[in-house]
Image (cartoon, rainbow, N blue to C red; front, side, top):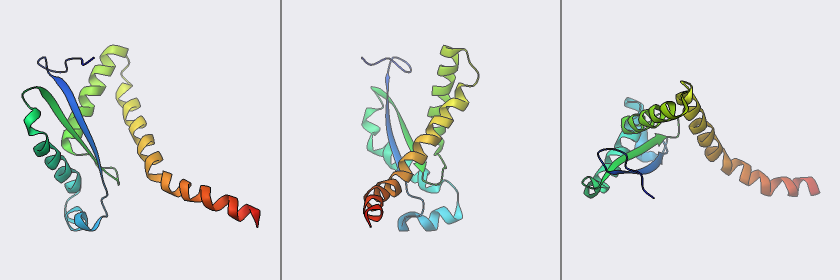
Length: 126
């Protein structure tokens, strides 16, 4: 079931995580913070431009070093505003950003833990 988000239109989101230190972004990221996330957000907006009549589209672009694109901040502000109204708790915005922070740390650290999972049993057997 789709719940209307704004003006009777449903919301559609596309989450993109940009690796800030990738060769294609380093030069831009070095001169302006958030430029890689902004570029990714603009690409997603162009990709889904045909949805504008039926859906409200939010590109959620996040850099691996923590910067969110402006569109992502607008979307998260609206989610936290609605959560605060529903829960009647002014801390909902803080809770939302904490959850996002923990999720990002978990995802970006997973490859390290995954590799250690394979190495640890071999080391312990020796």
